[in-house]
Image (cartoon, rainbow, N blue to C red; front, side, top):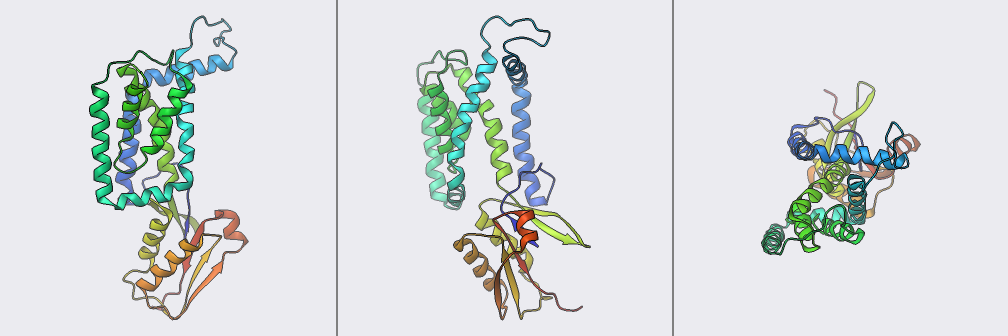
Length: 288
């Protein structure tokens, strides 16, 4: 079996330990969509009006300010800074295992909310908010990927700091979370590819940093097994970083006393189908 670095397929039930987490985030998205369904519909409708050159489907021109279309544009601008997090995502996720750090971050969230609640209410809405307001909130949303900092608490507080109306600050923060939450959870899925009865398919899905998922994947394959032929095991990959390969080697050595560990590069079939960042362990079971 092999582990693929990431996947961008629709979510499925998967394993039980993943199922609750997936449902939790899916429930968040559904709740936001239900609460702000009117805004979502208005944004879609007005974006199409803009694409048609300011005309409705029947060809009649639209008069006045297309506030929902402008709100959609500001959400796009506010989402763009999240791409800055992708190169350091695995490093940021390691902070989840530092409990004191998370405690301090939670205190900072509380302080931000305390201060923003006592600020004079602003007057900006989607009709007069600035591009720099969206960028500032988007950059702060990047910072809020740090464990312990509330994403919504941070973006709402910063919205108040830049002069948003309180209700609009809440509205913009939650609408901004739709692409953020959906994209973040899809990018964190690392599926195990299994071959059973001669057919290849997606098996258990792991979530978190790649090194953490790799350790969990190898543990699932080797831990506590007495049916393994311990003369040799292969670690095959399509191109991974050296420290990731070391994680695989250390985990295998910790779990089973294999006489020989062979590290090899995957051939064209695996490499072309799964792409770079794919790694797997290959072993032989004893004859039953």
